[in-house]
Image 1 (spheres, rainbow, N blue to C red):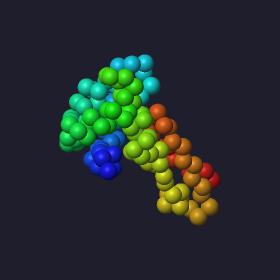
Image 2: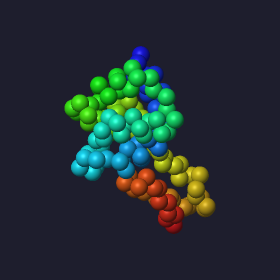
Image 3: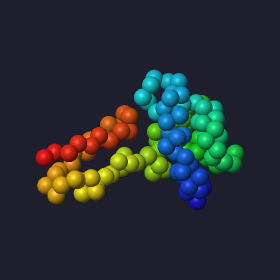
Image 4: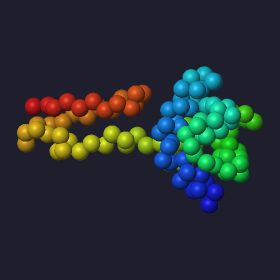
Length: 118
């Protein structure tokens, strides 16, 4: 029950929290690791209210040591991170019935590129 409550509290602001954590990584970049203080600060800065018990549970489940937390694991294991953000139905964008749409997603920047192929 505890994790479901935490997930519900985090899910609305998770994209902003995730981006902020990614910018504040203090370990080798790209590892998805931050200090628990950074995690707590970013969650608070995004107006997500976790109780001390909820935050402690979150850290205890996703920590690598006493002070390092994997926000990547939080994101994937709680189901907060979705690579389906740019699911676009090509039929909505075709100007002509014979047009085909090519959609490419750049994961590193979360940008979708659209081009019409004739």
